[in-house]
Length: 371
Image (cartoon, rainbow, N blue to C red; front, side, top):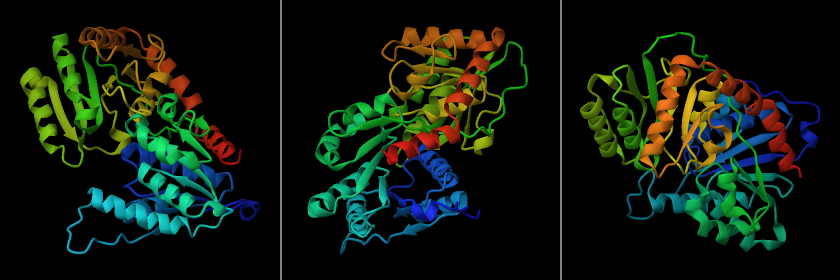
């Protein structure tokens, strides 16, 4: 893809995105690429500094813009794994040295907490050469509250995917909530299967997302016309957990359970009527937003980022994460609605198409960077 340059692009301060991870996770990577495309269309020079060749390739392919890959040195005599703490520390050190070389007029966006540490190192080492540095908070920041307080005071601001993710940075630096754009690539549900309802668990399969809770909730419905589809993959060292969730599904649901692994993004919601989301600490919940754009019914906890864009009973259903009976009731309402009330999915799609518009959100993101 060729990068389009507007007449005033050269006059605008460049924007440099800094990442020390593999795109910040599946949803984080997609959000980053879509924002970069949007900022580029608004005439801004956006480049990437990363330690991951895969992320650089994806960036160039999606945006047509510059991506530079740094080599991460290996500790002498140590086998540093791809995601080990030693490797991440060395990556942060390498990024710190590169941030120090970024022109002072540039605006820097650090895309993960390790890069935040690196930018803090630079700010402490060279307080006379302060840059405009924003942290993109698309991760569950409550886990890094201590790091936020230790490293966040040098930030110009934190751009957060939800009010939930912004809370740990309040009082430390200016916070701005900007939802992420969702490209409308998944078709609305067009086939009416009558009483047969498909519930889906989507995305990374690991303990923090509690898919086992979703499996049990579907089994408790005891409805022979409800099936559960799980699409995604294990994460890092969670293969054993993935196997245990699949075994649980097979034992409790039999032929009503299917694990399909990863599928192309445009097929994520094929044959799905209801999305079940079980992570109360999700910063945003991209699969929830994508499901709304596609007109599916969503069931989410009443905590976490996704709760902020679901109106209970109108654009989806919420439940108390601490209560199995609350989850059970919300899931039952969603299944019943999938059979008799298509308006919920239509309202969700109408809301999502307006609120997750790529152009509007890119402009809002740019307004924060230039504020």
